[in-house]
Length: 209
Ligand SMILES: [Fe+2]
Image (cartoon, rainbow, N blue to C red; front, top):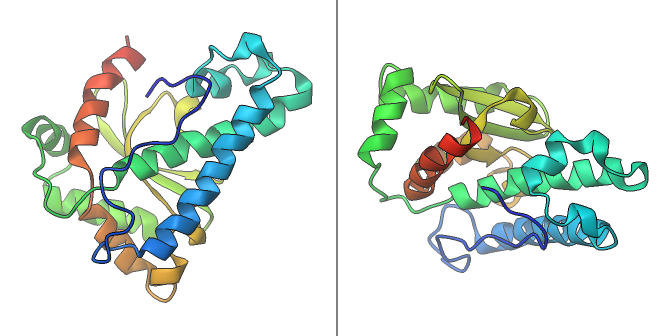
């Protein structure tokens, strides 16, 4: 995911108006609009700084100390939010997506079974007592790890490449699952866009070269 200015919104792999989706269209629209606001804020912050318009999100976050002080903190905040939300919205798929062999092999190389991987992922969500995200990442030795990040922090400084991730801010689920967030975690893991995960698994080669 190497995207530079003018930062776009992702094309969703599902219909936001699907009444049967595990997240209601009301909840999705509220969340998507929050995310869009952050994309617009980031674009407007960088609009007056042509030399940084070629930088992708990863560079804005990793080389933040090179940004002008006047915009640095806000750029880091909104870059982190946009980076994490891009992964979250791209991670959302339908419930009947077949898991590509390459993805399943990677999961089984790091977890004892697919069901124990799902259990570990949802447990990490349950144990996360803050606002933020939980990502499935790959490290430089090709091992998959489940990593929580707080607020607008990202996995970039950890030298980890995220393959998919769940948003654990209340705004992502409160209309549908405010009294049962565990159901949100379980339904999320059953609605992963595995084709996106496969693309990212291939893309991560560039990150670790
Ligand atoms: Fe969010």
